[in-house]
Length: 417
Image (cartoon, rainbow, N blue to C red; front, side, top):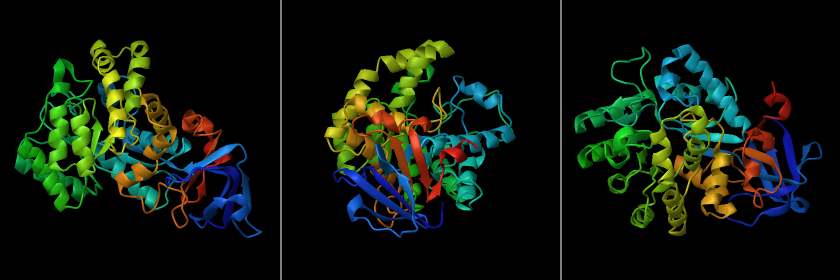
């Protein structure tokens, strides 16, 4: 659309500001922005405006995925994902992943470690209008230690185009690595503080960086005006990351009441990425993932879900992140994460806020997107059904009746092209 005026009329408008839904509401889009939101009888628009009939549908802000690896494919074998693709193939796959993302109603993403700084290049290409894609808050390469969680490849295999991580082993190297990401154009910094569920030998219970090294990363990022996202599963790693001053904890299987209290006090966000864990448990056996993946996740899932619920009740801001591109998790999945958050015990409205207003605040783009308010960018989705009665209606491209990114329509005809 881009120019002119469109009125989305007659649907349930969930503006994600904290106000009650508007049962028969209208949203006016004009020149890429939201011009008005309110009950249909109160909203005025030019007679020449186009009308989108949203009767029986829900109208919401575009969804946000705060944990994405846009260059990765979501296959079962991470090593093969790297070794089987040339850099050219990775670049074209990235464009396809961005297309799949917006078709699923995901209008903003935060990347968490990708090869060749392609996430930064994609962000800039979208801003130039070369193609329609989600808004991207990019990190470049994640910072890990020798043999750390992010190191997907065995040491005897290297790719010409580099990795999605940078190895750091001391405070000087930590500061330099942060500055290299900033030099490349990163909007934020990603650090791996602990092992993960796909690590053999119990590294999920180990830490990667010393307190001094982690502090050096966060201090340097702060000096560069960049927030830090931290992959951390075990309690010690989570607490060290919060104390160091990170902006968000990613995954956080051991994010217990003490972690929640510290996070609340420092306004640290929690991005639990429940869907990737669920996908591995459900789909892993048929795809031949290692047994220890399944054991690591199944033994911790009940406490993970309980910790998410407790963190929410303690006032920690929960945000949707899917780990899209990682093991068995495709792109455009935050709608499924919304459903997982409800399953973990969040009220449906709180789960929707995790994918909209909370996520926008974490990404630092809440002045532009995340709620349906006059003056904000017209990132809007229309889904078939009642998103509060059945949050699964926001999950996947088949549930989208319309997607608008900055007022540009990704209607069914265009999406099928």
